Image 1: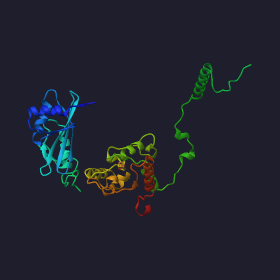
Image 2: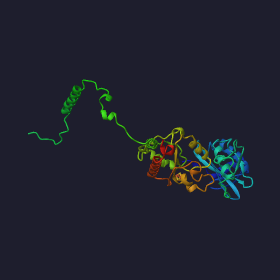
Image 3: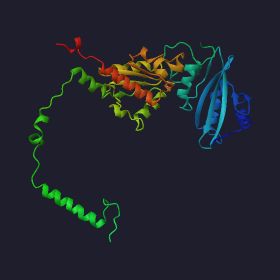
Image 4: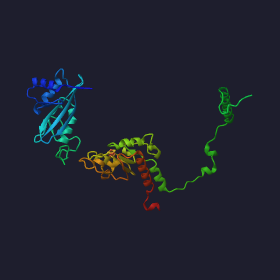
Amino acid sequence: MTTSLLTTEVAKQINEHLPGAVVETTDAAILVNGNSLLDVADFFKNTAGLDFDYLTTITAVDYYQYFEVIYLFVSMEHNHSLVVKARCSRENPSLPSLVSLWRSADHQEREIYDLMGITFEGHPNMKRIVLWPEFQGHPLRKDYL
Amino acid sequence: MEVSSGREHLYSDTELDLLEGQVIEDLKAASQEPISDPDSWLDEELSQNVLLTRLDWIINWGRRSSMWPVICFPACCAFEFISVMGPRFDMGRFGMEVLRASPRQADLLITAGTLTWKMAPNVRRIYNQMAEPKWVIAMGACGISGGIFRSSYNVVPGYNRIVPVDVYVPGCPPRPEALLYGIQMLQKKIARRGNFANGGQP
Ligand code: SF4
């Protein structure tokens, strides 16, 4: 099994390199500032000892006031994993895209855009993937009827 | 005194060798001349046999006995369909073991699964590509009405919105026996079909 890294220790590392990026740390995950998500991801991928070479899962939750996007990073090299979350507001649902770092983000970000309506800035092909282009609304939002 | 084993048809190795030799000798002795063309010696009556039937019947018999399904398995019902194809339930008994990847070679569309609106144009296209005559079996609750996903934003509430359905097989998923029963219903339906205008009268 993949071991999950201690969130407090990784958060400490992030704070040293990118002060202000971490918003909150719980046992399960690190909540980072949406604006510094790309920097944090880059730090994860290119720091010796972390070496997150694989982004397995991206998913999103609608908490009414805001959306939360959840990323699961894995390092094949060290066999460890980490959950990172980022939030965006309902009024401006947008986060930086991670496609430039991990190609596996491509389809998953498109799916979140399609069903949850969050745009990922910098995604090379931000369009619907499950539904057809003319479809109205984003069905997995809590207010979709 | 010799005691019979009670198993006279079982021979010792030596006897078996002997008998085998005898069988071959007999066959060889009886096979000194070539056998002539069967047409020259088959019964005179047999060669003059006539089978009276209706053209409708023979056409329908041919059609219903060789229905080839096309691959259209969008969801979980497919697994039940696969077991119908397999040796345990063996759809081949009804002349339809040939699953065609090309709709051009198929007569039957079995809709084994939930259909989404995104997929619907492709199913319509598969149906249109099939050569006439063609039939459709709506398999499972999803095929009939959209099933448990009926009210979803992306599910077609029944294949009959997209293609004309001949037989409906209910269940979620239907048991293989149910699908076989549905296929037999379709075969009965085909048997009733008239293929000529005004009943084939000249
Ligand atoms: S009818 Fe049931 S088993 Fe068949 S596709 Fe629908 S949900 Fe799946």
